[in-house]
Image (cartoon, rainbow, N blue to C red; front, side):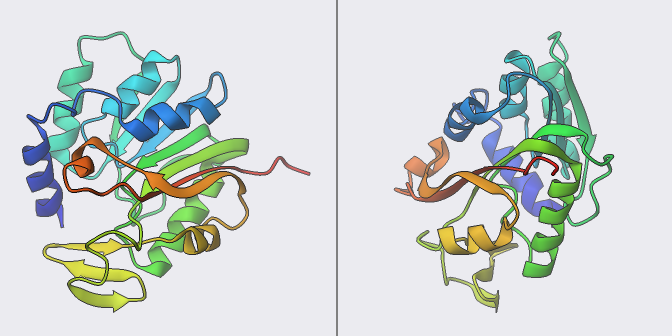
Length: 213
């Protein structure tokens, strides 16, 4: 599986958009609290994490791929940003204490898992978020051109080349995020890299963990 990410990051390394915040990051930050600890899951080369750090957040950027983390570490080394880099496999329990973060953010990193693993990951996100904390993520849509290509592993989940990919609708996103208070849920998300392929319908989700009663 790591070969998939290694190949992707080699491909992304010299792209013009790799060192600017993603479209979704600039949209999502408007929903974040004014300060606090932010966890990015699947940060890649951490361009969004660096962006959030410039906004004053204390950021922990995670990824499974060593080469991406090394690139991110190099790019962040000359700055005074509050940015920690950590290797994390999202198939495992998150190595953070309960209610540690004010924001959990994920850009195209939550759609690679089977239903059981995805549900477990959402529970882990709930656990590490503070009451009132924000979850923001961007994921593949069932209206993506790749949907139903490759071998179906379970509903909305396919083996496509080397990668397994889940595709979400607004309905299934709501099911996976049960317990969150929805702030934004639609299929209007896009990325710089997918504009070239004509994909403009990624699922955007932003929600808050309810305050303790």
